[in-house]
Image (cartoon, rainbow, N blue to C red; front, side, top):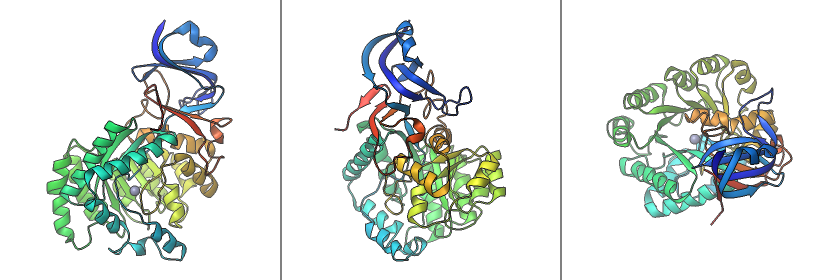
Length: 406
Ligand SMILES: [Zn+2]
């Protein structure tokens, strides 16, 4: 008998997200799952559970609800203070997102508010965001800094992420995004020197990934290469905001550095996507940011043709996507871009986990994986994006523990 300390029973459909028998979702009808110490030890048909597993712990009856591996959000900016709701309204009146990056508005406005906020206030705000991630079925996030943009500000942001991980069960993978933009009023060369000679060495080991924004209002191709070269020397893994606002070299650079992810990619070419696929890079798409900036549709058909892995992310941030909901992002990707429900389900679980180096551990359910689950009031997993704009998640389990909002 297999010993377990948590069991989930009677999942109407249990989507393991490990393809099996021609089903890309690897679903088990009337499924059950057992875990011990936060990891899955057994899964199969509910009718077979009693013969296989001895439980000393909690049992949760899903009562026929749909259960999927906890959602994985591969692109979020959860450490910030302040609001930019007025900029959202300005864009509806015709102002472009790029046109808002002037210093008074845009990212720099959030930088000022975030620098001015006490660390504890930023932790409180991040905890509120973590609760919204969890209540929407997300159990793992990639979390970027990038609103400090100096040594003390970026260090404070990383401290916030560490504190967050101690206060909520949400799994947090930290990314250093000092190369978000050059802070207004700072000399570009000086900032690049501080980035590469002070910040990157100081945060080695504290952030898993280094990210940069390679696009017109942010960093040029040669500046991006300078930052990523230094990051690679120091042992960071690489992510890159690329070709979001205009065509450019960002996707080529991501392929060159074998980045774990290249994000946004609205303007990526077919050739760039082929290079990214060959480099093993995952395309992380951000439908809510695309939608609210009235950006063109990413080249979905060319992505399919290239064979690149495609993740769907919330891109939670105060400027273009103030939402922690992956189901909402999945709905947009289906409705606005013509992605299929299966594509967005894979995108919000196993493909996202792969971009974080968590394949086989998060975003899927198999023996040895995290016992992270979202229980939803939907008929089947493909119906998750069908329910647009309402939260159908009824339970979120992290590491075999039923999370309840406090
Ligand atoms: Zn971003």
